[in-house]
Length: 90
Image (cartoon, rainbow, N blue to C red):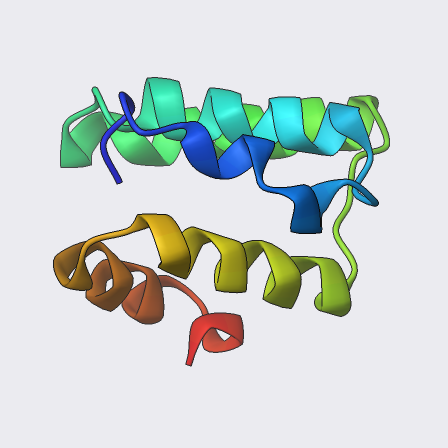
């Protein structure tokens, strides 16, 4: 997903998801989209540490809801990439 397309975060279906979680995802998409494959692992490890420090975790139903919203705003190519990343997206 291009970092210029953050419209999905304003989708009304996400109104029940904590704002801190959405901001965490925004950071993930915005900064992650600019990284090379080599830079991605340290970035993800850093995000994992930050999420633990800030007590941010996602329930399975939240992940599925976010994914369904992302699908509305993503290209078929981006959806295929997401499917490769997580069993929640299959």
